[in-house]
Length: 99
Image (tube, rainbow, N blue to C red; front, side, top):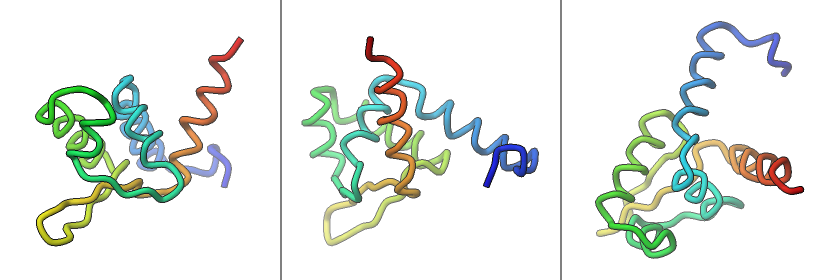
């Protein structure tokens, strides 16, 4: 599908997803969840090295905008990319930032 084939509503949703991703910590979260990985808030906050409440805030934004999904298993909630292709955004942007 080409961008020119998308409706205004789809373009707005895409823009909102990109706005949600546009933060260094959120880009890092996407990187951790590439290739179908599922992580808990605790695992993500340890990888980021920031407060768990801050991590939860970032995860909430990404989930609210349709970037992430979550699944509860026992006492843990696992976060994962709602659309696996979103991991390609991190790869693409990182390739564009290298000299």
